[in-house]
Length: 156
Image (cartoon, rainbow, N blue to C red):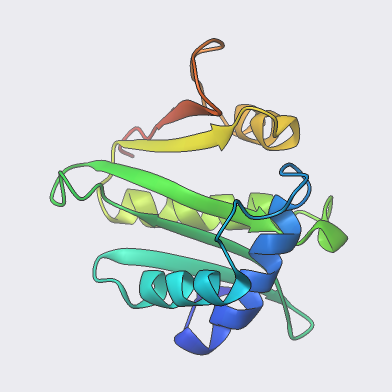
């Protein structure tokens, strides 16, 4: 089941986030990013106006999360930014990421979005393959640790 996150979900989301990031950041969270700090960040994201945090719950367990919003510099535009989409690694290959992605795209269309953006870590080949399979495109080269990907959202 996909539902909107509530503040009480923040500890479970932060823990899931840490497990997911550990698969492509060998040292876990960057220096100074504690689980408590991520709980606070997730709570702020959940409560942020015009932001969306969706969770996937299966058999009473939170197994996936996605967060998105319009960019701060263009809060009334038709572009949305996908900031996080994580599936608990213990639940990979069960369709959770696709289910969350589909829920995001449905919400973006309802909201009148025409384009979605995201940054993916260059070392996260699994995520890059997932996004490519779902129609995201971006440059194959660039600098830094992230690649920007775009997804066009034609109006129906």
